[in-house]
Length: 404
Image 1 (cartoon, rainbow, N blue to C red):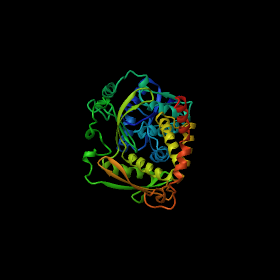
Image 2: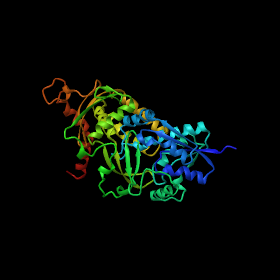
Image 3: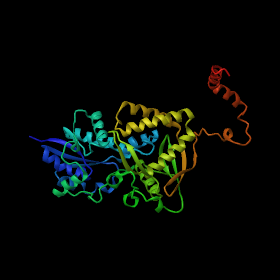
Image 4: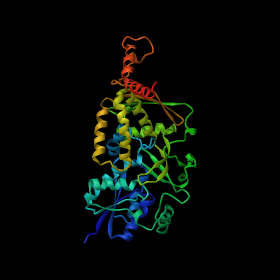
């Protein structure tokens, strides 16, 4: 009789490297490993040999980079969603993209369970499992960090070494990292004390520190159509290559480092350092274009929506009616967010250096401090009288109450 199958979200990192033998030791499952390639780069090299040698029956390496960009990154960018003012949600929207492919393969293979290496303290367990619940609620979930005897990354390293499993970290270099096309996160080790300044020369992998960036600024122009970036410096790029291009340009100029103490969904605060070079530039450019193209009420209301959108993404609620409804609202606002933005990159800073759009609502004739023939400044008196009427009426009432 054939064994039942479990599909493991596999990266070849510390946690998933030891999960395959742990599953074999504790369950009678056939283990099918799945690596969702969302832009990890060289991290996918050698994974098949490693997965098979440690007990998996097969490994799928699925290139889902374009799906990740078009179906997850761009909708979040258009919403201009930023978690707690800093975090550009790189891990948050990658997890449902990966989990969707895990479900696809689990259904194809007839698996009964999905296993992941997220810890019981983190957000990723929620993001993986909510996606599974939304897309295949009949599948079981196995989350080793919630049930095994391993209690720390040091324990996990000992477990791997005892079984001769190669791992990409040591006890001396023990950062927890997550890399994809959009960002690279760093947590743990000395970063667990918020008083410690990040050792950027040791941490950074996608970029240089601002101090090591060129002494002359770099200018970059980005063209958008309906809120989606399509060209860099006049050249059209497909989605994945566009982000890779901006990662290189911004990374060389030290742009895109965020040091955050964030509120995790599970209730604790955590400290992380994020490298998001291309994403930082895209967010800055997108915002400048919205300033030109959105009217005041829409822009202000959209800013409120962006906070909720970011929370939904951060909390793993991608496949929910509310997220889909907010995306529909966002798409409507982006119909006129078309144009070109120029940015100046210099030693870690990213500042606007010009924007234009055929849908611009900016009127130089209206805004000029010079002579104009389109705006009657005397109209402002009546406007202020009506706008301030509630304040005036209340002030008159208060004076009467005081007998003034």
